[in-house]
Amino acid sequence: MKQHAKTARKQSQSGIYHVILRGINKQVIFEDEQDKERFMWCLHYYKEVGQYKIYGYCLMNNHIHLLIKEGNELIAKTMKRIGVSYVSWFNRKYGRCGPLFQDRFKSEVVESDEYFLMVLRYIHQNPLKTGEVKKMSDYHWSSYQGYFGYSNLVDTDFAMDMFSSDPEIAVRRFEKFMNEKTEDAGVMVYGMYKLTDLEARLAIQETAKLTVATELQTMEKQKRDEILRKIKQINGISTRQIARLTGITQSVIVRA
Image 1 (spheres, rainbow, N blue to C red):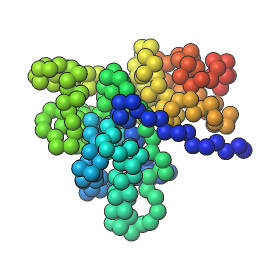
Image 2: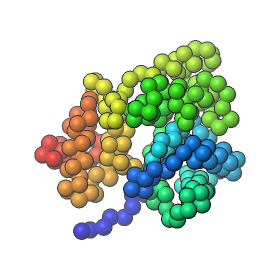
Image 3: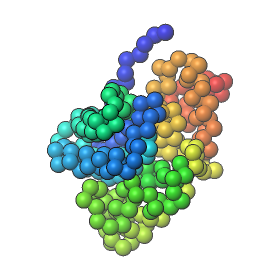
Image 4: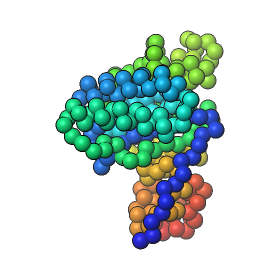
């Protein structure tokens, strides 16, 4: 079978990325709360080095979401620093060796306010989707609570200013937006309405575990069709949208 080169990582014009770190072979990357505390320490420590900004995060048992803006170095270098530091500590603690994360982290560019807020909401709602908690405010390992108080890690002003220059109004609007129901537990579902292209793109990328939707074009037919079948089950997405966002013809999508 023909081997395809890795897709070049798309560079964000805004410098902002939605980064996803997953455990290799879906392995658990946090065995206990001390492990999560250590990863948070890494985020704090290398923020001083790389001068990046964190707008949102969520630590789950086998993956991590970050909404991050590049500082004085490229996102790949920043994530390498954080990953190497945490994995070295994790391996020493548990007497293991070898990689912990998938060899290439996922990243998608975030270049509009609309998409930024949608991604931030998606990150904060992750624990709801997996059934970890019933309220976002009950989950300790995300940035959600930081938006309602002081945080020395998360830059909350950037998002809050999108809602209002008045802090009290901004908090109320932020809370309402973050709590809008957009997906069902365990499945990438955005409600019974037609998805915008931004929502559909995020849904495709998350369902297919891809950096960009057009990567489907380079896949072997059987695997591609299997993923297309899953994508077609997303509520609110149309065949025309899938074709437009993936570059795959509607007839191929229908037959999959």
